[in-house]
Image (cartoon, rainbow, N blue to C red; front, side, top):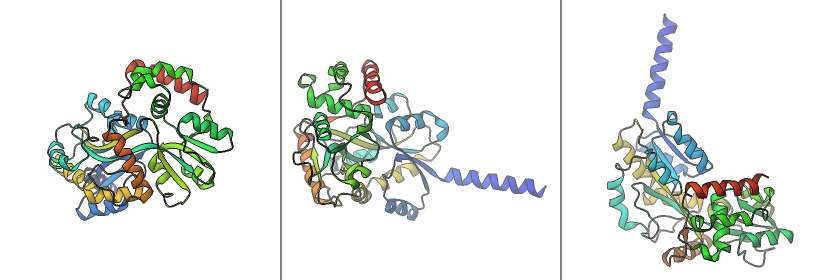
Length: 334
C-alpha cells in the first residue's frame, strides 16, 4: 500500500512540475543563457527544445502531443502555421502595437507575433586565399576548381532563391520562385553533395574557404578571426526574420506567456542574443553587441532593404514546391 501511495505522490509531483514548465521551441543555440537566468529571477521556469531546420519545426508542431507553448520560427513558415491554426493570433497584439514604432518598419511584418532577430544569407571567406569577393553560387564552384574549400547552406529553398536571384534577371525580385522556379531544372549539376554544409564552423577552422549561408553560422564564435570576411550578395540579398509566437493549443495562462515573450524580446535580451549569435536586432538603431565587421554588413543589408533590393524568403506554392523538391532531389541526393 505504501508503495502505491509513493508512486501516486510521485505522479502528482511530476504532473505539477510539467504544468508549471513553459515549453519553448527554438532554433538551436539561439537563446543566450543570461535570458534564462533573467526568467528564473522572474519566477518563470521554461524548457527549451531546439531544432535545426524549418522542416523539423513543422513536424514537431504538427504533432500536437509535444505541447509547445511558445515558438520561435522563421517568417517563411509562418503562413503555414497560421493557415493550420497552430498560432494564437490575438494574445500578442497589444505587445506588438506597444513596440511597433521602435522596430524597423521595412522589415517587420504585422503578423501578431513578436520580432526576435533577423539576418541575411551572405558570403563568408578567407581573405588570405580568396582575393575577389564571391559574387554567386557559380563563383563558389569556380573557387573550388581553384583549390578553395567551399560550403553552401544545406536548404533547398534558400539555395534555390539565391540561384534564381543571381542568374535570372527576368524573374523579378518580388517572387522569383513563383516566376522562375521551372528554370531550376537547367542548373542541376553545378553543385555536388559534398558542397553542402550543415556546419560552416568546421570549414572556417581549417581556413582556405568560401561559403554561402546565414551570417551567424560563420560569425558566431569566429567573428574576431582577422581574415574572416563577410559580403552581402551582390544581387538582391536574401533576408530572413524570426518571430516569437504563442501557440493556439497551449494550456498555460496567456498572461504568463505574454510576460515571458515580453522578457525574451525586450532590448536587453535581444542585445544578449546579438552578442551571442551576431544576428541583427529588430529595434531601430540597435547594434550594441555586434562586431564592427558585422555592423558594416548590417548597414549594407539595411540599405538594400530600404531601397527594396533585398528579398524576403517566402514559402513556395504547391506547384512550385513540386518542381523545387524534384530539383533538390537531383541536386542534393542523386
